[in-house]
Amino acid sequence: MEPIRTCVGCRQRDSMKHLLKIVSVNQSFILDRQRKLAGRGAWVHEKCLRLALDRKGLVRALGDSNSESLETWLRNQAQNMADTQ
Image 1 (cartoon, rainbow, N blue to C red):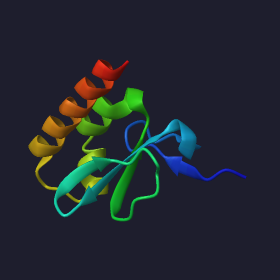
Image 2: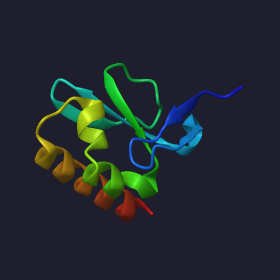
Image 3: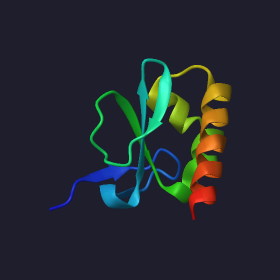
């Protein structure tokens, strides 16, 4: 049986393989593609990133009060993912 996690954007439960894991380590954010890093993490569908930011789900899950830095980081990640496709 595959582990199930809840998306911090849409709040739907889904398999880990369908979700991105974002980890906060030492006040910086990492997109954990291997889904194995330790640290405070949040699970989110790629399509729910904007929703997770708007609802402050990522901010709550990662324990970061600076949502602006998180939004800037996510914007950069989205651009990097678009560039590699």
